[in-house]
Length: 304
Image (cartoon, rainbow, N blue to C red; front, top):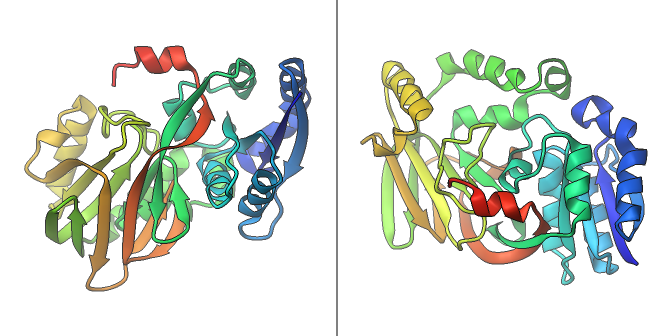
């Protein structure tokens, strides 16, 4: 019998996991897993510590039950260990970007059924500096701060709309930042509004930001939005809705393996919606470095 640890965030999804916990456990036991459930604590980084210990002790699967932040913490715990179990995701957060990228259903019970099928794919992982990792995306720029600044209370009350509300409040304060970005022999230097380093096609609930991004091709999809006026920014949002924003002269789009980011002043850096510190940052794509449960049929038939 295989061993599986479910690490869950009790605050995610309005405490949703407590309601479905018995059914999730039943499905995985029925699929041949010996299941242990462990809750995160209020200690910062507790999920990463739990995941690292479980991976180092030889658990064969670690399942993150929560949102993108929970998934990121589990990924960091696994990647810091010499032993790397299979990662599973039960989408219980607000946006659940990477779960969607894997073809998982929004309903965590249906996602548990997909995990129970034991279909596994290898995916790329982003490595930041010495020992920080992300699985979906990294970002810089003032507007990206809302991903980790929105309170749990707001997310519980408004769901994804909480990000929109805080984003609209932040627009009057939106300022460009001066950066130097070196990527695979090319350099960009100048003011930008934001930049994303993506591993998948879905970011912040948007599935049209970088449609061609793949989770295991060995490349990041780098997007840089140059400094633009508020009016031009609005027109770019319209292009984003149509999926033609990458053709704009205000946007730089590249497929790269390495990115180095520096700034005249320290810039906030986030990964998978979690605050990651300040620049400088060196980011490297680790090709197919982690095994994850996924819906292989959906991935094969995906339009991206």
